[in-house]
Length: 199
Image (cartoon, rainbow, N blue to C red):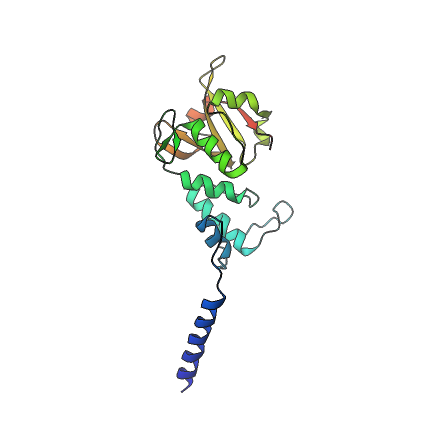
């Protein structure tokens, strides 16, 4: 009898949840699903003086994208930026293009900036460099641009979007949209400057 009553209560609860559930509107469905989750996170930030106040849903969200992108976040990065760049992950490289079927480095950056910030950048890493505010490498934040050239006096040939922890996402000619580290020998050698787009 007790099991029968409990089963009946469970059926009523499920029925009521069906009527009161709201579908996400106008949002990336993956982003909406992550924001509505309520599972406890695996690792919360421990230093409350440097980390912003976050709730469990935010922590779950950042942990998901940390795992997806292979980057440790500090829980203050733009959520829409993380969701957008993650959607481009694995897109093949195609010179002169800017779509999910294929993109070059500057095409990828222009599409992300248009979608996340509503800012239209030129489809050229050299032109982008001319329009950003130069910043010190030690001051780079998520969303800033990182530029590369092959030695002193050489032109800028590559651009990516900084994420965190010395990691950036870009469209590489040898693998498409991927996350790389500024500490990798090739990128450490060719890193030229960081820049911030004025919003």
